[in-house]
Image 1 (cartoon, one colour):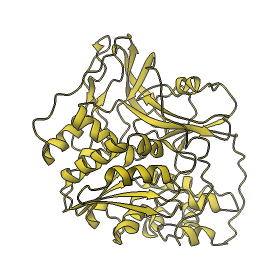
Image 2 (image 1 turned 45 degrees about the vertical axis):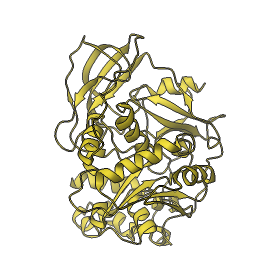
Image 3 (image 1 turned 180 degrees about the vertical axis):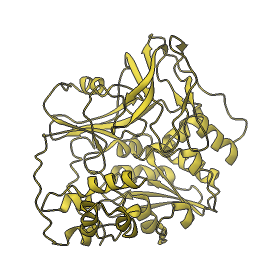
Image 4 (image 1 turned 90 degrees about the vertical axis):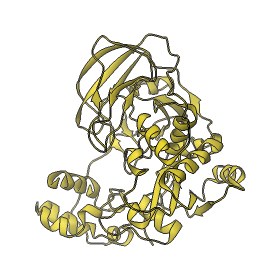
Length: 419
C-alpha cells in the first residue's frame, strides 16, 4: 500500500460555507508565483489601474499573466522576498475603492484553441499548489484520452476545494467539460476521496446525464491527490519515471482550477481571487474564505479575528507540502490553498534507526533512508541515480521518521543543489 493514513483535521472547516473577504487596502502581486518564467511587468510606478487589468504579461510559453484584483495606483515595482524564500519582482497596488471589475470580452465560439487562449489571457495556473500554467497543460504534445478533475484534497486541514465542489458544483463541472474540450479527451472523470460525501453528492447530482463524465470515489489515503497516483487509481495506467501525465494520455486539473477556467471562459473573469482555508492547531474557528490574490496574509488573519503578531508558526499551504511563512505581510499567491497556524515546532533529530518505515510507505517506491545517506555525504550524483527526481516531496517519509530527520526538506535542498 502506498502512502499513509493520517488524521485529516478537517472538521473545523469542512462545514463552514465560503466567506467573502472585503477587497484589501493594498495588494502585493509577485511576478513569480507559478512554474516557469516570471511574468513581465507592463505597468509603471504611479500608473492608475483598474480591477482585472493585466499588470504583467506571460514571458514566454511557460509563464502566466498577472492581473490586479483592486483598482488604484501602482505604488511600487521592486524585488521582494516571496513566500518560499525566493526573491521576485512584485507590483504593489494601493486600493482606490473604485473596484468595478474589468472583464474580458465574450468569446465568439468555444473551440479548443479559444479556450486555451482565454485561459492564458486570464493568467490561470494550477490552484492545487504547484502553480503550473494551465494553458500549457491544455496544449499537450500527445493525445489525451481522459481529463481528470482532482477533488481529493488529501492534505490535512484544507477544505477549500471541498467547499468549492459543494457550493459551486455546476461551474466546477462545466469547467472540467471545457478542459475536456480543450485537450480533446474522450471522457472526463471526477476523482474525490470517500471522506467528502457532500461534494460527491453534488458532483453526482449535477453531473448526471453529461456524456462521457464519470465519478470515481477513492479511498482516503495520503497522498491520493498526487496526480501520478490519481492517474493510476482512476485509469489503471502509470506515468513512467521522469514522465508527465500526458505520457499516460491524461490531463489532471484541480477542482478550483476548473472553477477558474469556467469563470474565464464563460464570464470573462481573470484569475484575481481564490478560496483558501484558514485553520490549524492555534485557531479557535476555522474559515474558508475567498481572498484576492496579493492580499497580505496579515490582513487575512485579521479578517478571521486572529492576531498577526501572535506566537505561532505559520504555514502557507498544507502541513505536509506547504512552506513555512516567516513574514505575515507577504501576499497570498494564486496557488495558496491554505494558511495554517501551529505551535512553534521543536527541532530534535536522532540518527537513522534503519526501521524501514519510510521505504514501506513511499508512494513512489523510493528508498528515502538511502537518499538521505547520500545527501549527508553530499553525493548528489548517487541521489540522482537513486531516483531523486521522482520524489514528489509529499512529506510521508519525514512524517513517519521516528528520529525526526527532515527527509523531505533534505531532498528539496538536494534538488536545488543539482538544478
